[in-house]
Amino acid sequence: VQDNTAYGAYNAGGGGQADFNYAGGQQAQQQDQIEQIGLVGMAADIDHLEEQNKAVVKIADDVKELNEAFTDLNTLVNEQQEDIDHVEQNVVQAKESVQSGTKHLETAEKHQISARKKQCCILIGCIIILALIFGLMGGFGVFS
Image (tube, rainbow, N blue to C red; front, side, top):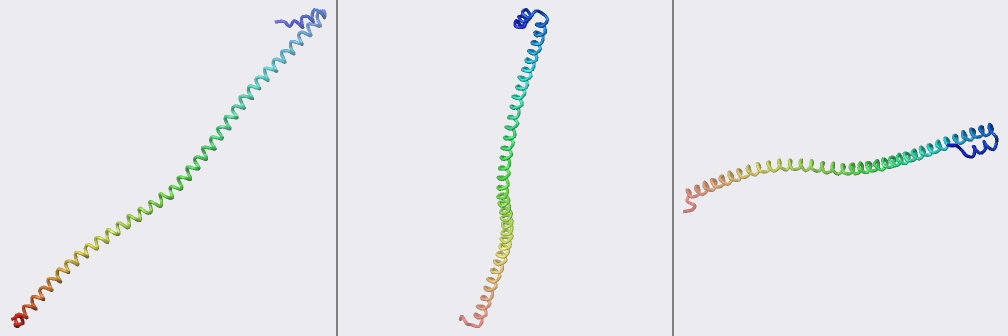
């Protein structure tokens, strides 16, 4: 591909000078193209880096949000743990109270059985005493 402007300058200028201008112009044009390609490449790299930066910022924001969610969850768990500990303490106390109540009921049952036996013995003793009293009184002629 030839540059017609430089070629025309070659024809008009008479030879060697145009060759130099053509070669220098071509080098300058190539240099401009290289710089433009470099700038385009740098612009693409900058765009890519900006996209990566946006992605990193989004990830950082997501991590912060996730951290907040875990902090909230931890707070809820701690609050519920206090309630669970309180319920557990109440269950332990209730179990101890039931065990103690069961022992008291067993003791009361033993006392009740013993009291019935004593009442029966006293009743039988009273009957015997009354029978003796009536028997003795009958022997003395109190009822005759």
